[in-house]
Length: 103
Image (cartoon, rainbow, N blue to C red):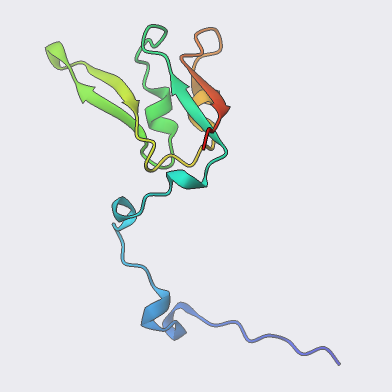
């Protein structure tokens, strides 16, 4: 006879199993990746598709002249190397490409 595991609810979780919201900035998760995005400033048209799509908020942007937002680089401390930014970069431009991580 197979015994079913009891599923617990959120109310039954102990406090040590819960991570406080807004703490991601405290963790440097960049060491997890096997590939890294490389941004080419000359090719970039500042469409910001990479910034909008990045699940880790790793695309750095700045407010430039005339209040125009521009890409300023990549925060490798938090980038996990998922490649979404490179995939979302317009096909013909390819201002972001993925390269093997060098340890």
